[in-house]
Length: 453
Image (cartoon, rainbow, N blue to C red; front, side):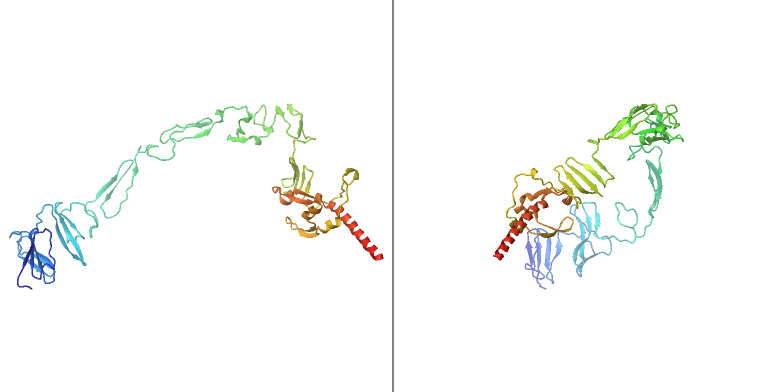
């Protein structure tokens, strides 16, 4: 260590010397802050004095620097740490796990309120603790004096609580403490009164009132119109009031003299009116008589469907007549005269061919060449998968167009399919084949003539 102390001086507030300013053992004074700094043997700049001091302010027997600590001790009297500046705090700090930590702050602006960084542990606390206390006591299990907790209002109850365990309070509903609509939610009945046809045998409202409701048919309005409804109000043999549908009342149940009490009597009058396709004779009778009902002999404009059931029937439409068997349409007759049948037609058949009915008659020319342009083919129908043989309508149309027409096929393709497909009148091929045979015959005769020469 240097044997000569060389003080240095600074008049700049908050200025702290660095190791480059001081050699080990040298001292610096900051006259503005009234602080004395020195560089120790470990090359640390430390404060060895600050401000002014009097003997009373340093009334300590010892003030020594130990190993990285300062010890303040006295053999008698008090040790007073006085933060003289207004609202200044007293702060105790240290190092915890290598971190600079504030252990205790005594707040000079809050009447000395002490704030500890961690828990406060003491052998015991004597006297009153004033203020908020949080956390759990290590040994306390109950309050010194139990306290009563009471519930009052619409319900009432009380229980004592000392903190040793939870409590349950049994309550009692207080009389007249609930007002309907004010203290209740949802539907409730405040008043019951009997309307038309209903009797109430008790008071309409009031606590503990028991209501009895019953049907009173005598209050119903008398009706004379058949259109007023489909039910009769009746009373059965056990005097129970019921409703009965019109369809369940037999004519024998009416009696002009005794009402519903017997099935004997005479019907005053009956009238039947004929509907579509029905003839009625003697439609209105009084007292006694007979009515004859028959199907009309002419059902035009009256009947459009007849059949065995909903699967097997015949229907007349505006432009078609359709026959259904097993729920499938098997035959249709159209208003243009076309008859569509879903399978074979087995019948004796003739075709109109009288010369007197024809005009513009001419012989088919080049019949053999035309026949040669038509193929005889085998094929499978797409709609039912059946194998068949014949010709192609498009090929026939090129040489004999009058034999080919276009038609919708409702039975094969469905009534929704309105596409027109080519159909062929096979009997027109007869003329083509006849003339082709004749042309072949002529060629054969020519060949024969050439051979004989």
